[in-house]
View (tube, one colour):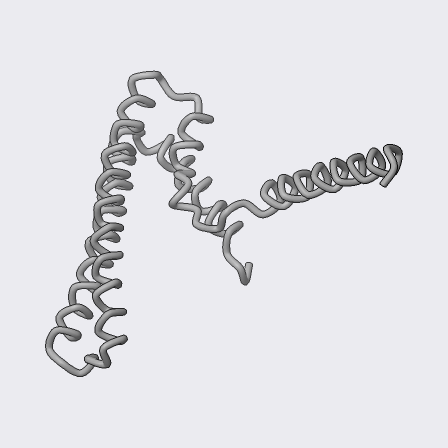
Length: 150
């Protein structure tokens, strides 16, 4: 292979790599991750709102506390699901252990929802009626934006 043909192949390879990177960035920007709660839109919206620094900091502190709680609940839920999968693999889905896991998963979902509503209540108390109305309207528009059936 001659020097000029190697040069052409290298240039072609570099162009392909740049093209793949541009496509990946474009797709990520146009189609962000769908789980709107995981990416903390309330925290982003709070930073965009015109709030006094002490209110913004109190809201951030509450958000961080909620995130820690949510993370531990997520780990509990994952552990329960792993146990469910092990029971399915062992074909032991008709025993009391399986029913207990079903109840545990239902309780974890309820616990997650309770924590979310408690977080929203605390944020509402921190922001007051006017600012919390702005926050929740913007959150609603984000939920509507992320729905698949729109």
